[in-house]
Length: 136
Image (cartoon, rainbow, N blue to C red; front, top):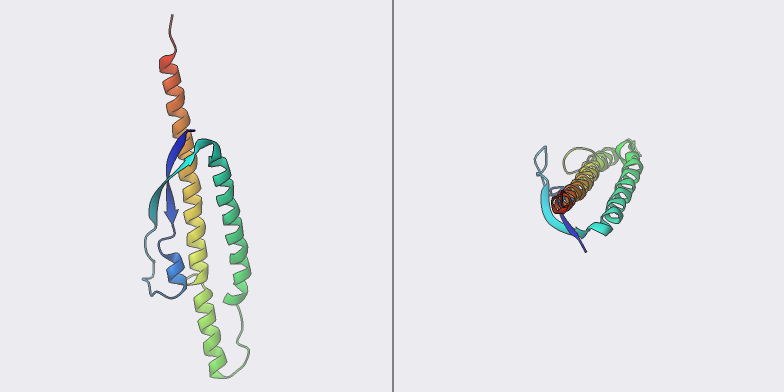
């Protein structure tokens, strides 16, 4: 079993932001966690992360309805409630749209890190094999 190491990226508190933790306009920076996976299982992990991105993209598209919802009534309370819904589902830091997009970016960066680790392992393995080849 050959293990490869990679950095898994988190969306820098995007989930906490989505429930109103009061962030700056740009939100917190992404963080990393050192991970390892069996080289043979890495393609499955990559596919699982790609599937997760697709689900996030679908959820983002579905959430668009919340960002464009008109006020159900002309009273100030309906308008105020609608504004809060739009803001909490929007793309500004702290909104669902923002958290979703940040999660997509984090998963994509993690995929890139795994692919780089696979490539680095293959190059190292090839170099080691070449150095063991006896030249006549």
